[in-house]
Image 1 (tube, rainbow, N blue to C red):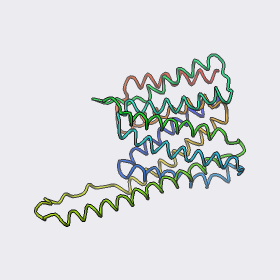
Image 2 (cartoon, rainbow, N blue to C red):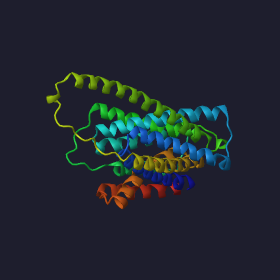
Image 3 (cartoon, rainbow, N blue to C red):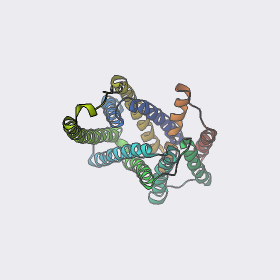
Amino acid sequence: MLTAVLSLSGALVFGASDFLGGLASKRVNPMLATAIAAVTGLALLLVAAPFLGGAWTAHDVLWGVLSGVAGAAAISLLYAALAIGPMSILSPLTAVVSAVVPMAWGLLVSGERLAPLGYWALGLALVAVVLVGFVPERGAVRPSLRGIAMAVGSGLAIGTFFITIDQTSDASGVIPLILNRGVSAVILFTVLGVLAVAGMGRRRRAAAVDERMPRASLGAAVAPPRVDTAGGIRLAVACGLVDVTANVLLLFGIRAGDLSVAAVLGAMYPAGTILLAALVLRERIAPVQWAGLALALAAAGMLALA
């Protein structure tokens, strides 16, 4: 019961962080928004750690670091996949892979066992994950192999995050999440630095070409688009605070019961995003998504009973 409640709550809160991250990414570079969110989450965890407690051990440090690597890979591949599109296919593909991988690990490797009702509920939950993650698009085209590979890779990385966090001990408290956020932030800021240096090189080459071109061929100057950097940073900070709250809920959900149950319900994160988009941006929730939400609640109830 507690696993179902914590995991589904964590998924909804995680969806809210995705919503804020999406708004931030419209104002600043998506990678920068993610890095700022990671640092913000790290700061909150460091403040909360003395009150939440947790023992530092080599075992938990190792798995916390590995979870951070998996998390950074998951976000990078997810953004790249959704940029390629179509989202209507790649988004639910990522979600279902992220649920199947830890579910299979829990049932086949860790030896978790559920009541018969629980297995039916897991199957129903996987269907719900696909329906909730469906993003209606007009004129959606068949996804490329590259897009599918990135979506599957992101799902594998998210699933790996669940598995690595599950390996940590209860006595570690939020220590693994502190390491997760620290490693993710270092990786993301390193990637940003590499991209910035590469971008400076391209701009220098472009400027050298422009200087050699006749002035008449340059045409009228075009004003650069306005960028709400301050607003984007504020949204990224809010995203980080909400995201780390979601991760704490998911961590406690995993520790309260079975990984297979926590991972499948945790994959319902698109539900939080679409609900907030409907409330704040007045976006329409598609009938297929309403069906997914209903199935998700039914599956959660079944898992709680199981």
